[in-house]
Length: 262
Ligand SMILES: Nc1ncnc2c1ncn2[C@@H]1O[C@H](COP(=O)(O)OP(=O)(O)O)[C@@H](O)[C@H]1O
Ligand SMILES: [Mg+2]
Image (tube, rainbow, N blue to C red; front, side, top):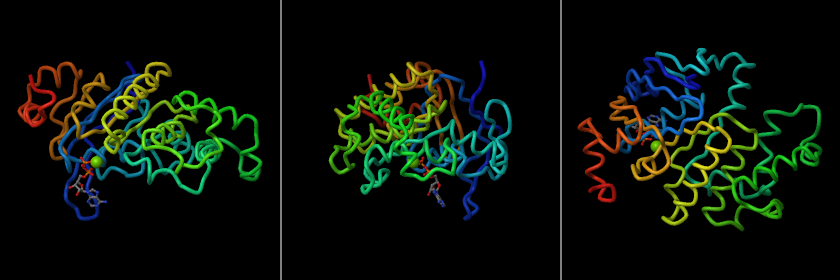
């Protein structure tokens, strides 16, 4: 099985110099749905930012399809950025309220795929772009006639669907999600988790989801990585890692969560 993404002895510190990630070796195979769990401050979001290529390792490597990711190489960086997209926790701050939904969803297509010569307005009028936008809206369960509206007309759950539509409009191979349901109410959470699971299965989309909530990862992810203070303590099938935890830290995480007990 090909590892789409992989880290080798990855170490990372912010400017403060405090080590945040220590010798991290994780692998994400094509089509898998991987959860990254750990307490707040364990380095989950930092690892996701490294996998997204917006932070660079202090030491060690990130491999994309087996090759060291060289984001200083503009062609490779552009190719990588078109294949890896992200969804963040808060669908209120991630969508510019002044932009129409169709413009918001079209934005990655325009910045990544189309030539620079045509004006932004012209590109938006292109039938191809419109088709992609409508396809993306429909694949997240929203109807095409919502395209001309603005974000403030939508609920948190619908906004998260819009954020997901925007992330998948370029047909990326990898979707990274940082606490994608943590800002949503419980019922909406379930629907967004189902949506992510379906998108993964139907499109052979590889998904990496960060969550402090083990229940989210237990219901969404077939593999789980457990991070404790910047160290990976376990990676394996979710059924094993969370179903029959062997590491004391994983046991502790599970015991702190009444919903998963028993
Ligand atoms: N921009 C930053 N500069 C310095 N330290 C940071 C920055 N972002 C996060 N950290 C620190 O890195 C550690 C891991 O943070 P983070 O990756 O956000 O953890 P998690 O997502 O698991 O809660 C924390 O101690 C946090 O304070
Ligand atoms: Mg975080």
